[in-house]
Image (cartoon, rainbow, N blue to C red; front, side, top):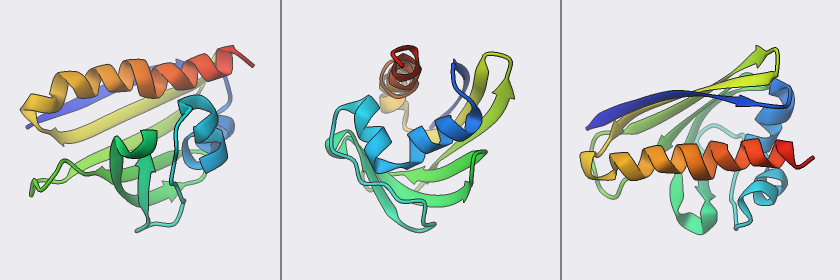
Length: 127
């Protein structure tokens, strides 16, 4: 199992980025796929038409998101924490993910860089 940590600079204020990561309609705009999302702790979520699924753990509006991402029937929980910091260019998004299965690590890093935050950054560049 491996852990991942990275930072992404997004050209929008933290409050807008938070909305882009937590509201179904906005998530659908930058993913182009079916989404199930709620800011209710304990609720299940699904992104990219079920490619990423898990449970929402905690939210601090405009500041942070904490989720458990599922990897099949593995006992170790993979916890994702996204913390949004004000930045001179908009927002610095700090991402930490724990307990990524070794076999999935490279795909997960590519997913964060290209599909998840890559798409969010592209979404704000296109505005």
